[in-house]
Figure 1 (tube, helix red, strand yellow):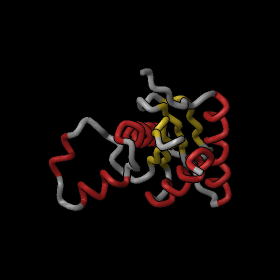
Figure 2 (cartoon, rainbow, N blue to C red; figure 1 turned 90 degrees about the vertical axis):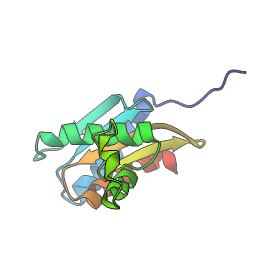
Figure 3 (cartoon, rainbow, N blue to C red; figure 1 turned 60 degrees about the vertical axis):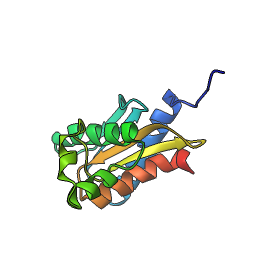
Figure 4 (cartoon, rainbow, N blue to C red; figure 1 turned 135 degrees about the vertical axis):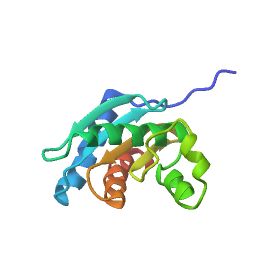
Amino acid sequence: MMLTKPVLTVAETTQIPAAARAEAEKNKWAVTIVVADDGGHPLAMLRLDGCAPIGAYIATEKARTAALGRRESKQYEDMINGGRTAFLSAPLSGTLEGGVPVIVDGQVIGAVGVSGVKADQDAQVAKAGASLLNG
């Protein structure tokens, strides 16, 4: 039997960054917002005025990590900070808080990654975008 799953379309990859941007601008945070598919491939990027260029790279990696790992990137940061330093050799470079999976019908269909402010603020913006579909 063939399984089916929802996928992110252009509609969602437009709406998610808009919702995240609204949260960032409400708080006057200059961030980069990236939406990735379930394979961690970037589908949309929005770098707000004043965000350093490196934010684009870091946000992409956070989104990739959350998509491939099927969990918030913060869980990897917590694991490493908790002493599991061997995980630093894993092939992920976005193991910082701010990557949030997008979940529909119990399946991870992508992720939002945000970079530019404090880690918990990045996560707050990412969750504002992901919440459109995470409910």
